[in-house]
Image (cartoon, rainbow, N blue to C red; front, side, top):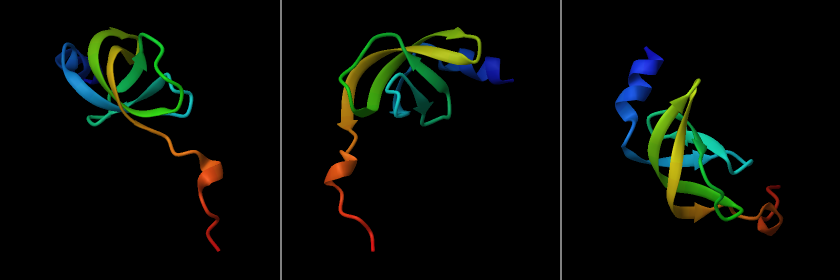
Length: 79
């Protein structure tokens, strides 16, 4: 079932929310994604093109960084 859904997503452009590693994340349709190329450090939201399935992950080509993570040291503590 998951494989069939992932197959239907290949070739689409989607937005991916990256994990802190900056290499893996999830699309808005909960597709597990791994980037095929390095992107700028601290990227959080990335527009990608889904290329191919490898196991339970879809390999994606990054197209555009849409937003970066806020640096935690710049945030004020909550009291």
